[in-house]
Structures are given as structure tokens and as C-alpha cells.
Image (cartoon, rainbow, N blue to C red; front, top):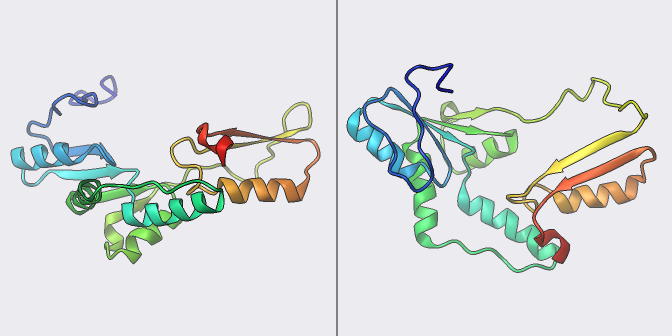
Length: 179
């Protein structure tokens, strides 16, 4: 980033954020609150972008519902964690999310449409994806929260489809094995 943008600076988790005067500040969910506050103090007009935003109470409801179906106990968040999440989302000028589902969660929670920006992950499903050996490899990445991301539904669909010449790779937490 520094090579491409001469004014770019970054900080590591746990360090005091270098949020002197700047025009745009980018923070990731769960780690942006102090950065947003410092940047706004230095420049009240700073634009604040929140990456991978989520509505934590909605996230908990969905995740814990899936965890229950998989035989696992619920995840609990403290009131402070819920408050921090809400403050980050409220302070952000733009919340960048990875799907229209996340966008819907923000809209249902009362956030304005103009504040939400969807940047979908994925691939062109119409482009041929067969490997040289003729197989198709599917990849599921859900190490942070595979239950909310639909691992249970994916595995049910995979079992029912019984695809030939296909493989499924799952990059998930070890907790999946206990479910």
C-alpha cells in the first residue's frame, strides 16, 4: 500500500492507531472504534470506512441458531462488545459488506441504504471451472464463523447431490469436528 499511496500509514493490532490528520480512515469491524474516534478528533470531516461490518446482535442470533442445530452451545457477547459494534457502525460513513444478505441485516437494523456498500466475494459462475483432470473443486472458507456462513446447509447439499468428479475443501475451525 505504501508503494501505491505515498500518504498511506498503517498500525498493528494493540498499537496506538496512527490517526493524526487524515481525510479517509479505514478500520475493520471489532478494531475500528478507537481509530475512528482519534481520526474524528484530528479532523471532524474525516471519512470513516468500516470493513466487514456486521450487526452483532443479528450475527449472534443466526450463529447461535445454527450452532444449536449442530449440537453446540451458544456464543455469548458482553454488553460492551455489543455497544462497541453499534458505535463502530454508527460512526462509520460507509460500511463495506461482502453480501446482499449482510446489507439486508443493516437495512433491517435501521441503517440507511447510502451507508452500505456491497463488495461481493466470489467468482463468475458462468466461466468454466473444471481443472485439467476434469474435476471441479469447491472451496468453502469460513474459519471465523462457518455456522453463520452456512456450513451445515452446504454439507447437507453436498451429501444429497453426490457429485462425481468433484471435491469439496473446507477451511474451517476445529469446532466443526465437534458439531
